[in-house]
Amino acid sequence: MQALVIAAHGSHLNPNASDPTYAHADAIRETGAFDEVREAFWKEEPHFREVIRTLESESVFVVPLFISEGYFTEQVIPRELRLEEWDPALWDSNGTDASQATLEATDVGKTIHYCGPVGTHDAMTDVIVGRAETVTDDPSVGEGFGLAVVGHGTERNENSAKAIEYHAGRIRERERFDEVNALFMDEPPEVDDVTDYFESEDVVVVPLFVADGYHTQEDIPEDMGLTADYRRGWDVPAEVDGHRIWYAGAVGTEGLMADVILERAADAGADIDEAIAAVRAATTATGDGGVNSDASTGAGD
Image (cartoon, rainbow, N blue to C red):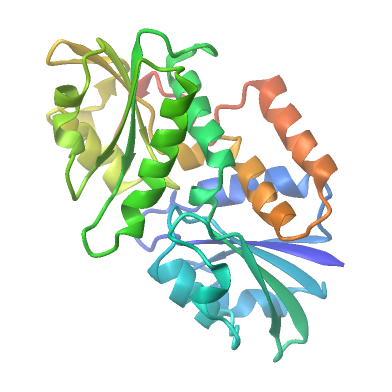
């Protein structure tokens, strides 16, 4: 038997923070690829610490629903899962290369395939582009548009920016959009000055965050000038300094995120090719824009 655990942050303050995790888990559960699928959180129940004990499967694939490698993926989750042999060096990563490490959870007698975070997987590049297609309602969006990939960023952890720059670079190489830039909340170049970084009249802004919440629904819209007060909402697109800003909201709410989770598990050895195809077909056939697909107007919490 094999099980999948999706490990996410969750929130004590925002009851909707875990919605994308449950939605992606349901999408994967429907494929029947795993005998068991569990959600686990740091700030909500069920907690990381108990989740492995709830499983009957001998082989467990743990996929962190986090954007970057760092404190949570390298310290918190392995510690709470009691992976005694864990060492970040097992990922042999420079900040965006983590794939997986196979370890034994000796206290419960299970083999744990601990995967890298979804945010650094190559498949995430397609999710970001998909988010741009969703917010513009244009499956061929690109020509005449600029694209801003936005992350939190922090000078305390260089890996926080690496994932954003990695995907921005991959999209830029495709030459689909006229311009592609990585912008940040807490380090330069800052999203507050988004119009300074683009010549294109139309700019799609995609935050590389797992869930919508305080940052994506309050800080970023106000910082970009989409609205003076997030509680009043904003137009999509919104006029700012002679540009039309198409603000997408968190990329983690995109339905195709379930595909990235499965790709991580497949890289770790899970035999789930049919499930990956099923999830891609479902999101393509239904045009599933994700958990919060109505982006015609933004609104605060």
